[in-house]
Length: 443
Ligand SMILES: Cc1cc2nc3c(=O)[nH]c(=O)nc-3n(C[C@H](O)[C@H](O)[C@H](O)COP(=O)(O)OP(=O)(O)OC[C@H]3O[C@@H](n4cnc5c(N)ncnc54)[C@H](O)[C@@H]3O)c2cc1C
Image 1 (tube, rainbow, N blue to C red):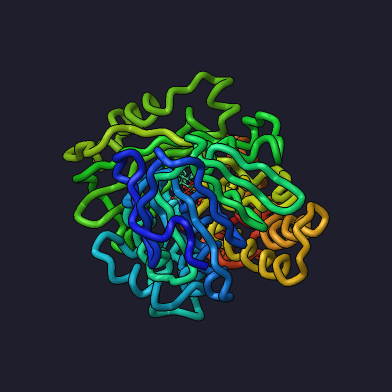
Image 2 (image 1 turned 45 degrees about the vertical axis):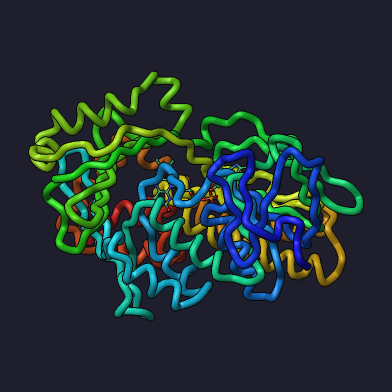
């Protein structure tokens, strides 16, 4: 269907455009403009763009609405795990290759955890199935999301509309009506995917949530250049500092000697202890001898920015009549690592799988859509619970320090934790007392 939004678009002189095979001129001076498509996706982050790409693979057209204009920024640690790598491969191995060839990315092959006494546990990632592919990457989100947006733009079946903020979502018996924030654009659809991230309140009335700071984290990030002491395999570094537990600092290396540096902690603890993340980060860099050495010749190349992480430590409603939520809008950030890109992309895949069935059967109601909730939690919940267990371990500083003090040089622990990165069964051992006993005795 040729849409009303079918040619190059400028909205009231804003630098706004429709990208893709279709684009159009829309004048807001005209009366309300509306169009209908099967699926509308709100938010072109990793969740929304993956949903559109997986729908397109199935031959299903979608309209993807993004309030910003690419290249757009997103506050993030910029670390892409093996989970993201496997999602890119699932979208198209050619897309993964494009990432690998980008000069803006740095291949990363492991993680280092620094205990409060700065002893570190270095854990290499590996993938037995794809030994030639870098197991992870660090790339600024402005560059990674642009890569995904380029992929989206190349698809006939996806209409990406940038610079349009969806202001309301109204569910009717016969369809969904979305209206932009100026009230002049209307989009009608059979189904809508809410992939509008952590901050949007767009779906809060449809899927109400209590303000729950225990299941939220707050993070800040700043770009630096000149940070030294990077592991030869470009490992991503996590620092657990005595006074800041259960929060942590991170230093993720980027190309050309740059780094993404940040700090994050659960929001309830941040508020209760009145912690200033900026102060924690700046003090650590200046005072901690190990960090001070790494930052001796470093300088910030950006300001400090903060953003929310909705953690997957509690189940929430992920759907209702005619809508599904994906990514941060569905609270799917890993409670231990703060990693959300992989789960956002996977939930985009899950949403596409579900919508294919909904369109085929003509069922869009809450009961039918609750299958999506079950599908998502069946895949992710046990992992979320385990990550919550680890988060709770860090919240008991005495136990965490005990484990970390015994970590360096402990082959059993190294192998076990390395396997945990890939293997869910291995992670389950964290719940068993004997695992801690073996860590402490070193076997
Ligand atoms: C400090 C910090 C560090 C992090 N570090 C990492 C990390 O290293 N690795 C990792 O995997 N994850 C990390 N995360 C989590 C990760 O950033 C998110 O989980 C991920 O971006 C979620 O993707 P998403 O597509 O759900 O949402 P987003 O990426 O937030 O995308 C949502 C999109 O929706 C758009 N939008 C919002 N409202 C509207 C509207 N009304 N109309 C139209 N468009 C709208 C937004 O502009 C945005 O483009 C970090 C998060 C933070 C805050």
